Image 1 (tube, rainbow, N blue to C red):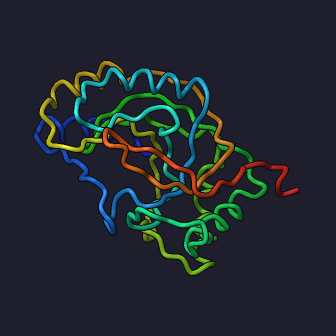
Image 2 (cartoon, rainbow, N blue to C red):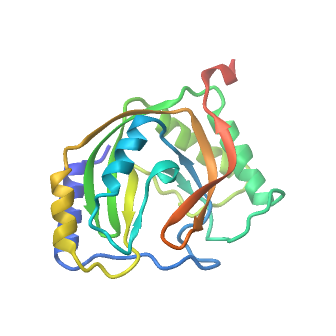
Length: 225
């Protein structure tokens, strides 16, 4: 796992030096916010992250909470507004995810620490076992075996996180955002078990995003027995 202290320091420096970035509204074919494979934590950890996110000094930006909080396993394709049930790629994603999850115990992650980064604010997700990395590798192999190319192009995710805020306009208060992150840099949200992986689509609600499930795969050791 990459060092979050270094990541946090780099994020602080980026915001304080005026190097914040921001997303633009979703448009057909854009490289951001297309279908993705994700895992969503549940229970008290979600309630804690949601409650804290509502205090973020980020008016006009996307502040995430509840079922929209997620860890991204893999970005799959450019943005499409409509992905029908019989879409061949959607079916391939779902089949590959089910294959990857079969027989694998649920991953456990420790959620702690709030970090700024150029495009927003996130919570660090620290794996407590190897299952998340195993799932990532299996899913990549299952996609490749189906001839599916995704947006990651061999990228290896060595940092896991849950986004609380995405900037969607030029940042007007970088010092305030950094100070808020510093105040919560050591916040302990608790441990989450991730028993389900999903293929999801992101939908713009006007004030933020909604995460809609397209395909779901249970992660259970019993499935492979």
